[in-house]
Length: 531
Image (cartoon, rainbow, N blue to C red; front, side, top):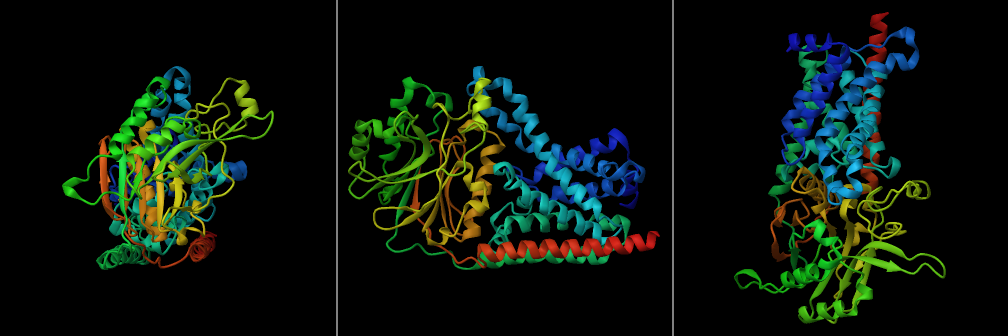
């Protein structure tokens, strides 16, 4: 291994950048649909050795000294995000005549932008780099800060955060009940990068011992938590039906097909329970499953009342419209409706965190004048965001914490109201992205929100993946991608999380401080020895 490390350290120029790109591309295997976390035990040591062999020129100023590290980090990130997010371009092909021109921006431009965060991560690490264990701590610190920033800057996009690589299955997800994703990002990089110490020797024994202890504790806690009795359903038990209609996105956008799309959902709603099972108490349709403005179509509400049995509740995604006042255009919201058996809308929740360029157009006054439109919003001006997130209270008193579409990828979107909810409710329409890694990655990230909160999740998706997961992230029932049908099950109960959100935040900053301190002390010792 020492020979391999030496050869990688001696790489220069374009070859060094290319190897960093390949290492990032390899890291994509850690994410769904692959979940091969062991790939990171190869890619991150390579990244460490590339940084070892890329000292900056002291005569070129601060930026010149950091340029090699920046280029390595950006190339690694570009490979990672290009390989992990290429499927976003599929959304632009639904209405190719309008949006195909933007394909290079989605497939190449966004990964190139996101790679700047990893350039920052490596640059931060390089500022406190040394020749032993400290450089592993420096890299973990750098990635921790960069991923934390990626979670909220410019509205945030923490898709495929590196910490997910260490949580590919429920037994490896349980640490999310103790520490937040930001902390997992740091710990994952430390564990994955530690084998690099074997090649260079210095600090290897201590570094590997810490990494093995962290990884062992991570696994042991997972096995322990899953060995405990599963959370019991709350009384009285509720049977939930997930409706997965698998409606082609182009069909949903066709005005001539709206009525047939609506009837498809109604037909699945009334399908008999399998094996003579209990009729569902709650039926859940996916995001924007009602293909028209429901409040403008009283006949549609009457049809819903016709198909619901006494006491049944329908939860459905829809576009909600609101008058803004005289002379002002109407506002549109991506919403969830709760509809009772009389066809009355008895609850609603609007999406808070909208998708830039998808559901609304940033800098609309300028970009709209250039002829640009939001991809997923067919109405003028796109969607408006809700000012706050409120719990949905269902008839009977049960409460849901609503997360529409990609809101489920943001741990910070789940606020202090979540512990009051009986379940998390995530509705989405991943048909935009076709049969690609995107829907699998989306489901995986949503799964972690259940573990973090100790709250079961009901997830309904147009084309999949629809599922109910319990408070430990374990799949109870599910419908695979492109499987048209329904599935019924009893709503699982809640489970106490080990820590709350405030404690996890403190753990993150404490961990970041410890890693920085280890790296800084190691750097100081390195400078003394060098001088």
